[in-house]
Image 1 (cartoon, rainbow, N blue to C red):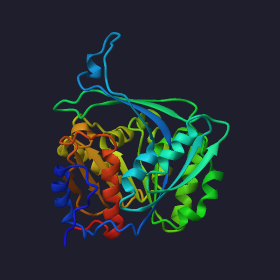
Image 2 (tube, rainbow, N blue to C red):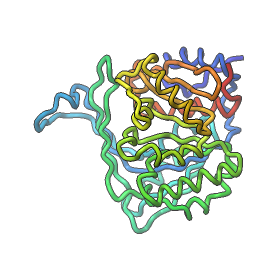
Image 3 (cartoon, rainbow, N blue to C red):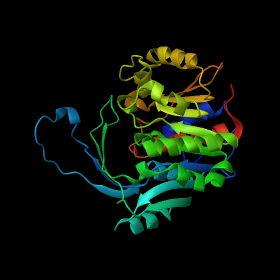
Length: 328
C-alpha cells in the first residue's frame, strides 16, 4: 500500500511525490532508522521583502518588513525536517555567551539527541537572511550574511572522534559544506566521513553554500565528494564547479550535459540528487549509476513556506532511499 508521508511540503508536492513514490516501496515514518547530523547552529534574523527585488535596488532604500528571530543553521533545519522520520542525533559546536541558554532551550523543543560542544572562547554565530520578492521566474533570492566568529567553523577532528560511536552506530551521516570553509572544519568532516564509511553508515553530503564554486575549485572538493554515497546539490552549483553552462532557470534539456559529465566522473556516490528549474528547486532529478534518471516536481513554486523547504524534501528523499532504495 502506498503511504504519503505527512512531512511533504505542499499538496502539490504530495501529488508529484506520489508519482515518484510509485517507484519506491514506501512505508510510514516509524523512526527505526538513525540519522546523525554534523552541522552548524546559529541565531538567525530572517527578513522577507514581499514587494522588493534586489535588482531594483541601486540606492539607499528604506522599507518595512517582518523580522523573524530564530535559532537555525544547517543542523537545526535538518533536525526539524528529519525528526518525524528518523531517530535523529546532532553533533554541533556552539559559542558561550548570552544566547547560549536561549539556543539550548530552543533545541530541546526539537525531537533530537543534541551532542553540543560549547566553545568557551567563541561567541555564538549570527546570521541575517534577506529574501527578496518572488515572481513567476524566481521563488525569491536570498542574501545570507554570516557573522564571524562562527563556532561551526571551529569544529575539530577531536570533536568528531569524541562522537565516533554515535556516527558508527547510525544508518545515515548527514553533513554539509559550510564547515569546509575552515581548515579545522575540513579535517572534521573528512574524519566523520571516514568513520561512517568504515562502519557501513550511509554518507550524505549537502553541497552548500550554493556559491561554493566561487570558494573552491572542483579538484579541491573531489576527495570530499568521493567519500559520499549521496550528494545533494543545486544543479547550477555543480555545473559551475564542473565548468558546464547552466542558464537560469535550468531546463531538463539544459541539464543533460551536466548529467553526462557527472556520469563521467566515476565517483562513488550511488545517488546524485540535483535541484533545478524555478528557484533552483522546483524540479529534481535523481541520478544513479547505469540507471535511468528519475525526474519529479517538488511543489516549491506552489508553496508560500520556502524556509526549510529543501531540508523537508531531502529528509523525505533520504527516508525513501534508506528504507528501500530507489528502484524503477
